Amino acid sequence: MRRALELAARGLGMTRPNPAVGAVLVKGRRVIGEGWHKRAGLPHAEVEAIRRAGGGETARGATLYVTLEPCCHYGRTPPCTERIVRSGIRRVVIPFADPNPLVGGKGIARLREAGVRVDVGLLAHEAAHLNEPFLTFHQLRRPFIVAKWAMTLDGRLAAYSGDSKWISSEASRLYVHELRARYDAVMVGVGTVLADDPRLNARLPGRRKVIQPARIVVDGTLQTPPNARCLDPGFGGQTILAVGPSAPARRVAQFRRKGATVVAVRGRGKTVNLHDLMRNLYGLGIQSVLVEGGPHLLTALFAADLIDRVVTFVAPKIIGGFGPPRVLAGYGIEEMARAILLEDIVIRQFGNDVCVEGYVHHHIAICPPAQAQKP
Image (cartoon, rainbow, N blue to C red; front, side, top):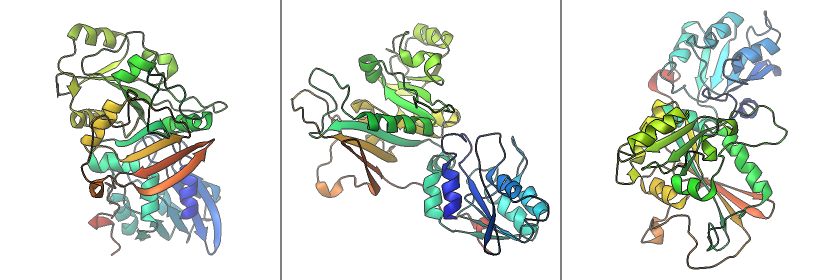
């Protein structure tokens, strides 16, 4: 199963909106086939593993380790359960049931009905981390949200003049582009657009196949300039402008003519209701969002308890000053005992920067549903 998870990770960022799945086919003590899902519309991991085993009678009596419940419905590819049954595989081992309502234990039931032994629960925690956007999307009906920022050693996001290029190292910025390529969307507040005019796309030199993320601007009153680079289709995926009730109808129509998706979100004054925004993004099929600023948007997301994971870069630079913004503008906890304590911490080094990654809290329920339990 650990090998299957390694294989699945090769598809991260390329299989959207499908989960990243890996499979290993074992007969006796020998691995006879491996596979992973490479891209939406291509064969699933189970089918790839069976093909690499040689097909025919080769897989008969074998055990298939796969990182998610095999599908049982017709989509862009046929059901994997039918291929497994036809191949004569004796046993299937999975971490947990697929939370997608189209599957949701039905694949397990179909296999057992055909006489295939199905064991559920192996390395469930590790497998959940691999596909946390997919699981969050189907279980909570909202995207998985990652907050990312870079700061100096004294906790500043910019110099007193507003200059912030660059706090982090080139190696750190390359990793950010890898993250952009992994998630469905990159989100910023309109203040970041006005200050930096970012492209918000994934730029990975030497890598041909990159699925560009959608670019989301939270802009209650629609102040985004019509010539902002995040609106240029040549720089990346679709642009989504999340606007409030006070956004001028004339400007809404103007941006829609330019090809942007303008989402009307409930709100008050200049602000938008972030929970309502997440419901809208769910309706658009966006499973994951990388939030890159600014401090007001990050503060609002933390206050709304919508941040799932944090990725922070700390550069060995000190700039001081009274004016430069901090990460959370006004969000504060009175007692240290009530501070947000990140879980499952990973610490990396990029150039001279230290990157700290961790979970704010775990929403994902990795326990399989009742119909997935071993009888």
